[in-house]
Length: 385
Image 1: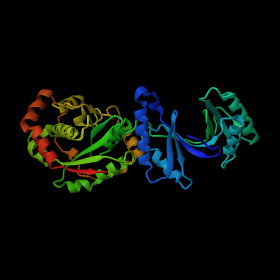
Image 2 (image 1 turned 30 degrees about the horizontal axis):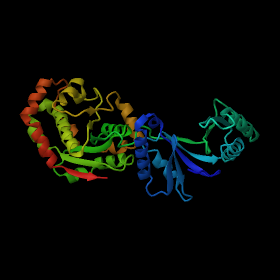
Image 3 (image 1 turned 90 degrees about the horizontal axis):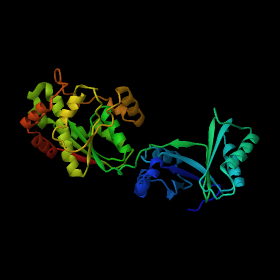
Image 4 (image 1 turned 30 degrees about the vertical axis):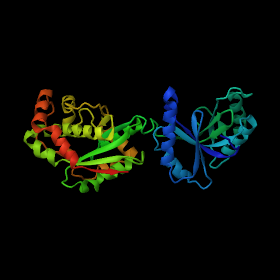
């Protein structure tokens, strides 16, 4: 890739992907693909350059929109708008002067330099010392603590990249790099956060929502679609299954205190069937240990009876306050707190908090859980983004 001194490029860093060894290229190619899809509609050139991706925007590009979208791409650890110079001290110093002279000018600056190409006839310390003098002439104090801005200089064989503003990315792994997962999504606060965590670790989401309506259309028009829409801003492609609960409820009401734990078992069986259909290898839930009656350790163990697929619970060690903070950060909280007839709010009196495995197996056999799950799946509707 050729670089022009004085041009401004977006340098995209991909953190832990650089440690992936033999599989590194596959991860980075997938990240490249996801960035291109996320930035669809913008004009740019994107190329892999050693341990980073270089994004060259067109002159008419909306840099605010590009930055906003890049923040939502899992696999991007950080990115910055960088000024390019030649890999020479004089050129680097001139570029630093240009950056530091822009308004609003900082009162103090920390100067960091990294020279990845060691054959150049100067060291990183030489670069830092030169720019310190330039900063002082501009009335800007070079500092190592309590500084207002940080000037970062990354020097390669072909160019030097200077930036004063680095943005933190979503981090994690590119969505799709870990395969697919069926994610149980409710109208509550927890499961959307679990879905976000699943995508962060590279899982492509297939959403499964079990609802309390007779008609799937009511569920599809409800707030869950809004929640899925917000999650889809982090990964544009997903499939959502809307499944009615009336078949399950007609067969489980007689179990009273056990109805809620049976509902969770039904959802997991249903998720397994969807996973087989969609080629997913995992199930993800929003459960947090001990948060409600159905999430005690014994009930979590009981609900898994007969499910052969691994179940991930990303929120297992988080408390409600931590989950709410995350929900607000990713943007799902406002939809999650809207009124909704959620099937998970079955109002069983004194719900069982300690279900024995042997009890669970008998109840699941009595209601014919696989038959019910199969019939319910046939009554489902599917939506794609």
